[in-house]
Image 1 (cartoon, rainbow, N blue to C red):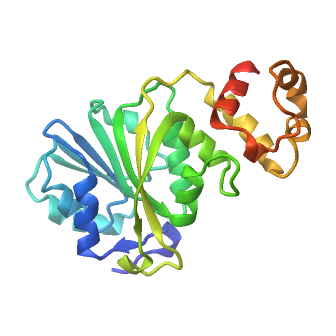
Image 2: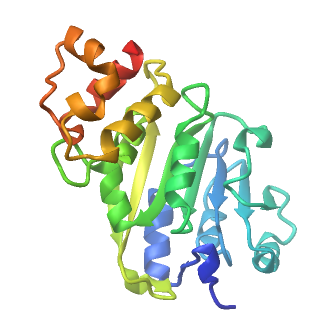
Amino acid sequence: MRAKKSLGQNFIHDENFLNKLSKVILTDSKTNIIEIGPGKGALTKYLIKKRYKKIILIEKDYNLIKYLEDLKGENNKIIIINADALNLDLLDLNISQNSVIVGNLPFNISSQLLVKWTKFNYWPPFYQKMYLMFQKELGERIIARENSKSYGRISVLSQSRFNIKKLFTAPSGIFTPKPKVDGIVLEFSPIKNYKNINIIKLETILRKAFLHRRKKIKSSLKEYKEILELNKFDLDLRAENLTINDYCKLSDLI
């Protein structure tokens, strides 16, 4: 079966890479594994060899469900859900906090999914780790630090709530169809001692700051000028110069 471009599908066919990826995903007999976009089950067949409590497979494409059902067989610890992960509230799964999210995310919705999982109302969330694959350019934006061209809204949102580690590159040749760019695998660990930041306010500030990223904040964030001055922010800085802590502090002040 061919991958559907409309769903952002790129299937992994390289067994060495799949084995390598499965080995970095840490689980035990109490772990719930949630795999987003398992496709035909290329990674799933490695995950079922690990220790786990349940494996929950969330696949939007109904035509791929039959492949997953073949893998599942009589294993009642595997649950298959035919749904769009963007529209699914993972809290409705009623699973324990000992969970990990795994996914070769559809390239066309990967940033939307990450933002969604970043915006849980309570923190730390029910999952302990996320092991996610992105297009390399997006992955580099996620882990970018201040004073770099890649640094932006997704960098601040992600790093305000996660410790993020780059695991390895996913060469374009491991995918079918072969994309024009490489992928990247990142590990996300929720920050447990996270200060309760209003994520909606943070998003609003970031949207304004990075809309015209070359403008100085005295212009892009002019409606907060008095607060910025009172708290000794340098108004001649640009959006890319403010640290993650700066943005979090500002969201707490407005």
